[in-house]
Image (cartoon, rainbow, N blue to C red; front, top):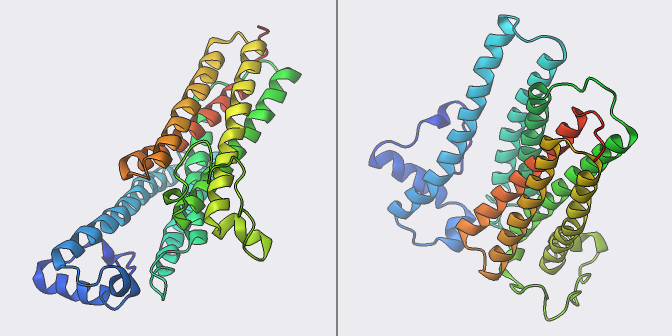
Amino acid sequence: MVEWRPLMGIIPPIGEAQWLAVFHKYQQFPEYQQINKGMTLDAFKGIFLVEYAHRVLGRGIGLLFALPFLYFLITRKTRGVLTLKLFAMLVLGGMQGLLGWYMVKSGLVNDPKVSQYRLTAHLILAVLIYAYILYVAFGLMLPQATEKPGASLNTLRKQGIALVVLILVMIMSGGFVAGTHAGFVYNTFPLMKGSFIPDGLFTHQPLWRNFFENELTVQFDHRMIAYSLCVLVPLYCWRILQTSNDKTVRLAAAMFIGMLVIQVSLGISTLVLHVPVPVAVSHQGGALLLLTAAIWMVCKLGSTAETPA
């Protein structure tokens, strides 16, 4: 889809003439000329409808949020800070749509690939919106602690927030892996090019470009963040089990470490199998579930009084 029509774009091409007109527009762009030269109209319909479904889903999510929000706002069923939080979600959702089109435009120029910077920005904003919604929802669901949490619980909560941030960084690095197609190279584990720390990590100049454009460095960074989580999350969960006897807190810790095991397994499988789409998508979904477990852990700690183990 080489056009962005926020209002009328909900209606797909109808009839052969409209499809041919849209196909003709697509043929003017580098993706057709350099990658899909000679594509049939039926094949074009296939890739068009994937993007069309994505955009319709995004607009549908916006409507499902905006209409109830307006109703609750008009009837004054939400007030104060909660109203501001909900309004922030609405604004962020609109920004996500704009950023999505900004990303698509980067692939409509000489290079038919979208910019890995814009792709990652679009991804991380979506994840931040999801995380913010979760945080607000969990805050409404969980009862407030009747007692002030002790020092050890406060420390664990701060450490949990740090892990949430690290998971977000991992997801961001995954965006650069996808944007540079770094997952299609160096498909061995645990070594890369026969070494744990391969040669060629800093061949690009200036130095900072390696972290975003060098396929080897991008994949290496993603692995290193994953290794860090493999050490930090079990240690963190062990500390929780040593600190609290609260059953739901301990269950949250078990869910957190269990999701880490699943996510690491999906990541390794995606790599060594040369990025099959179903496994890669599962890996992306696993990252969100890992983030969900981490946010749930932090929110649960914030609503729990100190209970020595």
